[in-house]
Length: 94
Image (cartoon, rainbow, N blue to C red; front, side):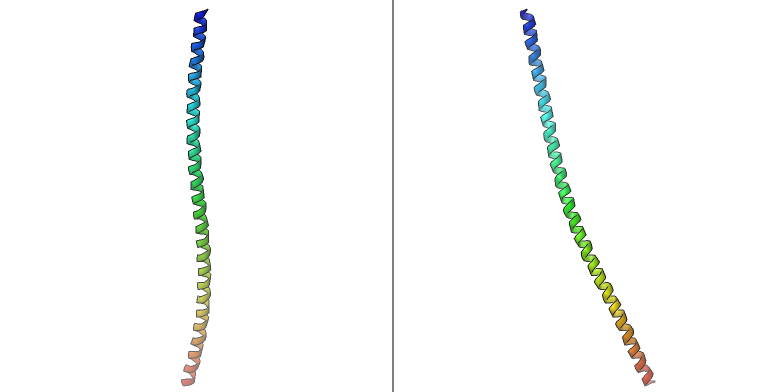
């Protein structure tokens, strides 16, 4: 009877040790996953910030392009007008 009780206690101790080992492994895995999640969140934050920066740059460049196109249109029109003026004066002279 004593042997059975001793064997039972030994088995209980082994189970408790295995349970503690498993608990430690799960805790380690949980901490690693939590760290990985935080790294991923930080990367996502960085990527979102970069996207916002790129979006602002795109808007700025688009505005700049529109302004330059408007200037080209105005200058082209002005050039035509000046050329007409020159042609008229040339005709008067000739």
